[in-house]
Structure formats: structure tokens, C-alpha cells
Length: 455
Length: 178
Image (cartoon, rainbow over all chains, first blue to last red; front, side, top):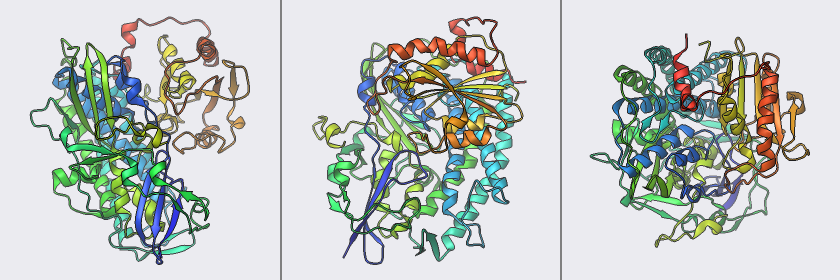
């Protein structure tokens, strides 16, 4: 007889989400729904009628962690719509900003996931804030990597949090030779730290994979060998940066994308009939509470070729680098492998960057209302923004952010896992729930149907 | 790195998409229009304050952190009040992303002087999006700027920078690191 358990809210990631899990007598998930419970916000509606310069700035305020990805994807969607090609040096500055942001993001995610894992050879879980070795020096290395990512981002992007240098048509300013050298020095320092940190994390992850059990709350949970496996496929547009509708061979096709309602995807109303008060941070939801994922889910379900897909570091490595490790550990390892990619992307772009080069297109067209899109490989996966711009004003705007793709995919990946490890599977996706929850859901005839329903 | 880790950091927190929550970024915008000493850095932390700001402080260089945000302390809308870290007990404030802000502030307060300038909110539209401050809070922006200038010791007056210099100007200033 299957029982229902709910973990709400899930922790150590960005935003508010919860897990509703149907489990068998052994506590193995038969069907899992991971859903966003962050209230819906209508940024797409707000964008209509605003200028093409304002909208990417508005988009960057959707989330506290991803302003850089949304600024770049937003600006490039505008450029794709108005058919504006930007100078090469502007593109290089954007790649530097983008890679620095990803470097910072991987380091931040390390802090969030370390408490799930053990120090090799011991039964001690890692507390990244502990003042003892070896954790102390690892934490210091993580902080330094974040500083390096943020500082390079600040120099190339103008500001450390909400970049002010990128604009429709390119960048406001190029950097000086001295600034280029500064970024170079930082990236060279980062190269060694990133390599060391990657190796440390892979050792921790392999050790976790080899364990027979894992302790969660009071339970000693056996480790399945296929934790987090799914067969949903992957989507990525570029190993590092992105693509857009102006590209000669775009690697993303809007006609393959469709969106369905949470109603069609998630489980219906049920009563929670299993609880575990010893589950970390306050226990699971009390028995007798009702859960209704269909009505509570705050995001639509995007599909590519008719199925939800995984986006993010593993998707990029599978699509472009022949990576093939499945499961949660494979996903984490893919993310660590990207550490060094980021640093090399920065170094290569700095080598190619001409500080005296032009960084702004001239003239900047004002748009004729045609649809343009840009897909940016944000830290958490493909971030697609679509826009129509006419006479400098936005007529239509849509954001398809990484975690929205990952919600239904990760829900499938929960099947077969012990329920106590479900949050570990979720954290493998480095979810950013606030980003994911901003949209309007449309039905097959493109009518807005779900704005009320999904609240 | 002197420029990247300045002595005084002023950070405006909040989301301009939620009406009065845009107070912090609005104060940052006004401060950016002024010529401030090179030892002062003004950061628009947006929603990312707890995630991003703490890695931008260096206890060896940074002596003061000024946080600007809205709050609900029961005052009149637009009223400004300086709060100390002690007045924010741990866990009293969590941002929308379940990341605690006050705890790290408590941790750094022995090494860096932390001052928090709060403005009483009138209307925060979350989760609905609404751009623009209410009149009461808008009127508090110049007052907040004066209060901050006094706090950081720039009481002798300052001048506005030409508009074209402020566009993306931080990239250029980042270049002037020694």
C-alpha cells in the first residue's frame, strides 16, 4: 500500500518549493512531484510597452541569484528581435561576465550541498562553517573563488550584482588594458583554486557514491546505486555561452518547445498519511494534511520534443563533450568539471579582447515587431528569453528559465529513491525556484488560462 | 585591490518591481549621481544582498557597512530610522530565498561597523509586480542620501557627476585599480 509523505519547504536552495512523494512500504518513491510554491509574478505582462532597454533590467530583478544570466539573455533577445549584431569585443566582455558568474555560482552551490556529504573515511557529515581543518581551508577556497568570480564580473559587467555595462547593441564601455590584466591575474589565481576545489569535490562525491548507507534524521537510509536516474533527455545550446535566433545554425528551435499546465502533469489531491518528525529541520508535514500538487504548483511544464528535459551542467557536457554519467552524483560531478571550463573561457576571451576595440553597434535598429530569442547557458541551464520589439518598445516577452525545465524532469528522477534522499536529488539540480515562478501559462490556443488556477 | 575592497560600503537592498521595496536601489541611484570619495563604494544589491555582498567586504580594508532597506517598524510611511545589528535578532529576517541576513551581520559586527538605515514602508506589492515608490517613500530618498553622507563623514557637500559618466561607469572605475 503506498503512502504519501510531504517535505515542505525543501531547503538549501533558492526559493520556496516542496516535495510530495508517494512511497511504498520500504520507503521507496513510486511517484514524486517536486513543485514550486513561490507565488506567481507576471514579469512578462509588466514588460509590454516598456522600452527594449528597460525590459532586461526588469528581468534581472526576477531573482536574487541570477541577475547576470537574465540581463544577458534579456538583452540578447531584444538584439535578436531588432536584428542587431554586436561587435566582437562586446561579445567577449559578455562571455567573461557570463563565465565569471558561473564560476561564482558553482562555488556558492558547493556550500549548499556540502552538508549532504561525508568526510571520506569517516561517518561525519561536512559542516562548511566549521572552524576545523580540512573544512576550514576548503571554505576559504570557496570564498576566494566567489570573490574572484564576482570581481571579474564587476570589472567586465560594471557592477557585481546587477551588471550595468551590458546594453542593447553591445556594452556601454570597453575595459582598459590595466583592467584586462587585473582580470587576467585573478583568473590565473582562480585556475589553480578551481582545479583544487574540483578535485576535492569529486573525491567527496565518489566517496558518497561508494557508501552503503546515509544518515538522514534518525534513519539509516541504504544508498541506491541509481539515485537520481531519469530517462528524460537533455537540452543545451552551447558548452559555455549561448545562441540566438540570428545565429547561422541556431542550436535551439522554438517550434520544438511547448508548454502544458501543471494540471496535466502533477498528481491530484491526496491526504498525507505518513510523517517523520525526526526528518531534518522540523520534520515532514503532519499526517492528515491535504496536498494537491495540481493546484499548488506555481510553474507551467515546458516540454522540448514533447517531453520535459534536463538542463544544466550535465546537459551541456552530454550534448557537447560526450559525458555520460547519470544520476545525482554524475550531475554534481559535471558541475565541478565546469569549474575549470569557466576559468579557461575567461582566459581565452581575455587573450582575444582588444581594449581599444569598439563595443557598441552603430546604428542600433529599433525593431519591426519580429520575434527574436536568445538562449543563454546560465549556471543552472538554458535560459531562453523571447521578445518582439517594434519601434524600440517591447510588444511581447517571455522568459523560459532553467529551473522551470528541471521541475518535471527532477520529479521523474525521484522514482526509485528512498524518500529521505529526495532532497539530495533536488539539490543536484541547483534549483532557483524564484526564477522559475514568474510566468503565465498558456493553453494550446495560446490563451492565458492558468494565472488564477496555479495560485 | 584597494578599489575593490573599499573602506566604506553602502548597499541598497530590495526589489524595484515591488513598489516601496525599491527604496534601497533608489537611494543607490541617487548616491551614484554624486561624486563620492574613492574609499566609498555604493552597491545595488537588489535581491541578492545576503548572497553577494559579504564576499565583497574585506575586514582588513572595510571599516563600515551601511545597509539601506525598507522595514516595518510601525512608523509613519517614509520615516527613516537607524537600526543597529543588535536590534535585528538572529532569524528575525529572512529574505525570500531562505537565506538569513542578520546572522552574518551579527558575525561581522565586531570587525566592521554595521549601520542599517531603514525607511518605513507604505506599500509593498509582492507578489504582484508594480514599479515605482509611493510618494511618502520617494520623499524619503533625498533625506536618506543626506543621512548617509553625514554618517560617512561627507558633510562638506558634494557635486553631481555628469550623466554620461554614470552610464556603466563602474566598468571604467574597475579599470583604475592600482
